[in-house]
Image (tube, rainbow, N blue to C red; front, side, top):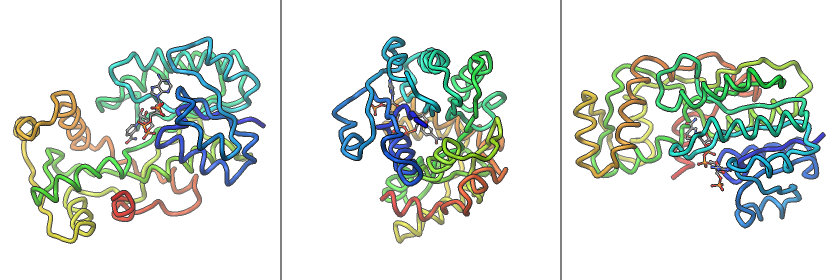
Length: 284
Ligand SMILES: NC(=O)c1ccc[n+]([C@@H]2O[C@H](COP(=O)([O-])OP(=O)(O)OC[C@H]3O[C@@H](n4cnc5c(N)ncnc54)[C@H](OP(=O)(O)O)[C@@H]3O)[C@@H](O)[C@H]2O)c1
C-alpha cells in the first residue's frame, strides 16, 4: 500500500505525515512537494519525496505513478486558479488508477458563501466527474486561524468582529490531520463526505475568554458592523484583500456556516477534539 500526500511540507501536510507515520511504515508514504529542500526532514524520516508543483501536470503524473491512495490538500495561493491546479492532481490520480482520493474541502462547500468555498465547490464538482473513488474532507476552521487574534488582543484588549451570535466549531489542525490519516489507512467503510468540526461551537465571547486565558489579561468583544470592521482593519494597516476576506468570513460565521456540529471529526479520530484554548496556548 502506497499513500501519497500532496502539499506535504505545509502545516497540515506535515501533521498528516506525522500521523501516518504512527500507522504505516515510512516506506509506504510518498510526500508530493514542490520544494525538495523544505522536504528534507521528511526524507530524513524515511518518507519518499517526489517533486511536483500543482502547476505541472507531467510532473504530477510521474509523482503519482504506483500510488494506491492520495490525499489532495488544497493549495494556498488564492491568486492562482486553484481549481485548475487541483484538477491537475485529480487527472494524475486518475491516470495512476488510485483506489482512493481524499480532498480537503470546506464546510458545505457546495452551498457555502465562505470566500474560499467557490474554489472547493469547483474542485468537488471536478472530482465528481473524475470516475475516482473519492472522500471529501470538508474541514472546518482551524483553531490556529485565531492566533493573530491573540496578538491583536494583546495590543487592543479586545476581539474585533462582525460575526454577531454566529458560532464556530473550529478544531486543531492536528485533529483534521489525524482524521485524514485515519481515512487514508482504515479498512472500515468510509462516508463520501465528512463535515468536520470541533466538538464545541464557540461564540465570540468564548473566543475572547480563551484568548484572555492564554494571555493572562481581560479581553472584551468589540461587535461592529461589517463596514466598521472594514474601516478598522484598513486603519490597522491590514491589506485590502485580507480585510475583505475577514469581513466576508465573519458574514459566513454570522450565518452559521462554520457551526459544524456533525460529530464526524471526533468519530473519525476516536476521541474528543482538542479544545480551542489548548490549541491557542500550544500555538503561542
Ligand atoms: N480550514 C482552515 O481553517 C484553513 C485555513 C487556511 C488554509 N486552509 C486550506 O487548507 C490547506 C492546508 O492548510 P495548511 O495550514 O497546511 O496551509 P499551508 O501551511 O499554507 O500549506 C499550503 C501548502 O500548499 C502547497 N502549495 C501551494 N501552492 C502549491 C503548488 N503550486 N504546488 C504544490 N504545492 C503547493 C504549499 O507548498 P510549500 O510547502 O512548498 O509552500 C504548502 O505545502 C491550505 O492550502 C488551504 O487551501 C484551510
